[in-house]
Length: 166
Image (tube, rainbow, N blue to C red; front, side, top):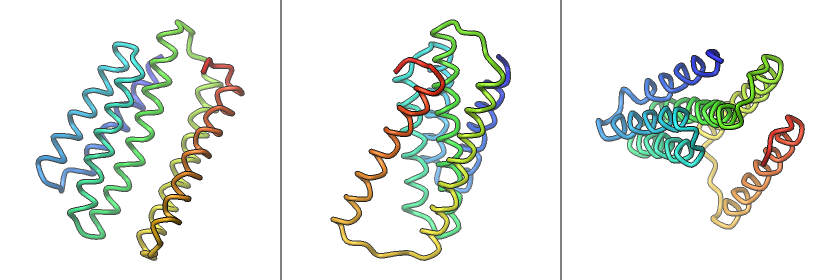
């Protein structure tokens, strides 16, 4: 069961490491979010993991808001690493809460899917930063709704395939 925790540590280090070049408030918020994520795994608490993830996302958004284009790419990388850390933390907390032994095959499948989603998200985010599209608010709202619905459907599908409870 050591490999998810090692991956979690690497993802949290990457998520906070990408924010080193920013202001101390973002770095402190990212450090606090990483600590909350670690406490969530230790306490087997999914809500705390979500709170830690939101803190990391807020720290990355502060850096992207205040910085240049290169800082926005670093914030995007931090966001992707934060997403990976949150997914691994929630998976480790779920395994500990259910007292299920770690199956290397299911962990490998989950990490492959996570890697694919992270890679696609980073590429699409980098393309969006490169092209700087201007969209109307209504279209952005519709895209946000589509993304949220797509994520919820994909999470339900992956949980059904893994056999984990909802």
